[in-house]
Length: 341
Ligand code: AQP
Image 1 (cartoon, rainbow, N blue to C red):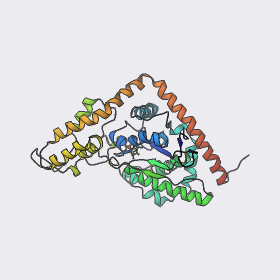
Image 2 (image 1 turned 90 degrees about the horizontal axis):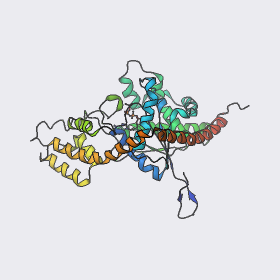
Image 3 (image 1 turned 135 degrees about the vertical axis):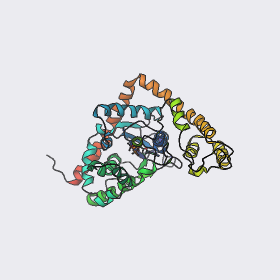
Image 4 (image 1 turned 90 degrees about the vertical axis):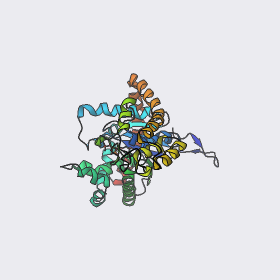
């Protein structure tokens, strides 16, 4: 899978840069996940050696019902494939199928200063919404570092909210290499220029599964339109005759992600002189957005009719991921100095 390209100067097979990314099966894949991350995964499948995992260990840091976890994991895999992830080119798998990552997390925990974890914005944000904060949420970024490094990934396509975690991953890689010898690369975050931080339908908070302010990627179009129709725009634009400010409007951000440049430019100038109203602006957005989403709904329907195909893709992905993870762990155990019979 990795040796497809030939380097022009040497004619030797060139390895593609390895990328690792993950998503929690904590709800339905939404437009924020798609624009911030999944859309990049779909294209990077063809340029990188792409590992994508559905991070069910991570999902345990939020309240969830055990009887629903496996189903949500399957649905997330189906949605990623429907979004266009090519399983012939990339590796799609479920995190808990490779439990070696939990062992590496423990080793990394012993190298990570508490102060570094206390600085993590996502921890502070999520902890502030909980009455009793569990250690799993605190060490979440260390598990993420283990996810990335166990596969020796050099690129990590993520939304803006995860950049700090990738920086911590680099720090952990440096600490391990210093303590035990050169083992891990220092990976770089890959953030899309326009979709790095999509706000929710409330126009304020990050679009987030746990905040219920989302439009799901595979949502039926009538339902998606209803949500879009009532989504918050520029809060200062109270009447149709008021000029708006696109830079303060989440709908404009979505236009920048889904609509052709000519439409975006027209909206930008017409909104500023109250030449277009918010509902017409949203209708235009919906047309362009749905043109991209409709084929995904079709692919999802086909996959849902053949669930065995999704299961086989995950099984095949796990086999490949396991090989890489086991090789890394053999080296790590040796370097850490664990007893070997
Ligand atoms: N609103 C967003 N804008 C841009 N990118 C986003 N991502 C998530 N929300 C946005 C990116 O999606 C990838 C997968 O995220 P995740 O499910 O692993 O975790 P998350 O960031 O915590 O996503 P949610 O929806 O907010 O889930 P919950 O509510 O369960 O915590 C990541 O690359 C992320 O950057």
